[in-house]
Length: 190
Image (cartoon, rainbow, N blue to C red; front, side, top):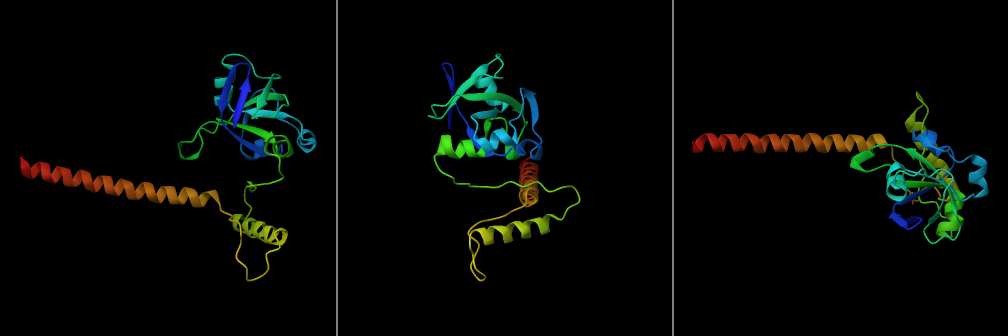
């Protein structure tokens, strides 16, 4: 979505969440403060912008307490800034804004849809048990009867990491094979 400050605008992604999002995802506060649970529940027009959005919209100016527009929302947004750093798969985790979920639903999207959930598991807890509890809760809330297939997916980020590691190993072996063949062909041609 488009965010606007003064005469500058920037296309970025937006995440609607609770205040717990920042702790769950290990965000570091650069300036200002994170929004509170009370502000999130009230649907306050507040957001935390990543450092890429900050750089593109504000340059060297501090965004704290300034007002910006999010999408076509006529509301003015109270802004704070945080930094996450490099995301997975080379993505820029700082090219985003985080908005209280109710605010995103009411003021930006105009619906109560939730398209994803992110859960952090405490150190030492069984991830598989948590996944099963989440699946059970979602099946119950979505009224999926026994024997029906899930109309959602639950996955552990370790699965993605394992898949990427496997792909990297395969590519490394493939490149090694190509290099060996090149050396062999080069040696025969000499």
